[in-house]
Length: 247
Image (tube, rainbow, N blue to C red; front, side, top):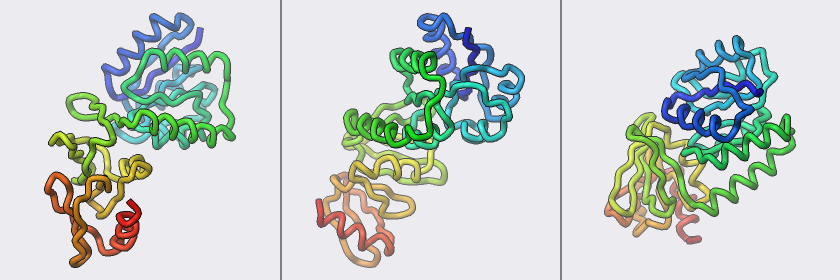
């Protein structure tokens, strides 16, 4: 029997994962659950599991903080998160797999099969993983957004722009939707850059496919298809001009 601990601050996610394991993985026993870095560190040291399901974002830090704080490391790791831009970091910690939310039963089953067959993933697997994730994102062209209500799945080509408000990011879509996410705009800048998004200002990330006009006064102003006027910072004006000319 493989002893497992689930570390995730979303109770419904932990419950769903446990249900999948009970039905499809009789050789996996979930011996503990944790919802924070502090709680996870304590339980891992006490229970000494052989498998760890670990979320990246926790209320008091990152899942990577858990791994930095513990001495016991004789377990396999499956990261679970709504963000795939942390994948390379995850595999530097010898993760077996990296499952994007909302979690799919088939993906969990596949990950557990890798746990059984492949004790540890070598550090040299980073390039292979990066290629796989980029291919996956390019093919599905969808992004998962964790909100207060739950998780919203959004087509990337529907996003007109994103604005920052402290640690929150608001997405504006073609259909007039506004989706507020408690994540920083920096994370989405890194994730969406391959899809023709450009951060024109500290507080603004835009989809260049939805730019209607670029006014050059001062630093510059973008007129988007939804009628919004987006300020462009002076230091990003030159690069933006080149990107627009290449469209």
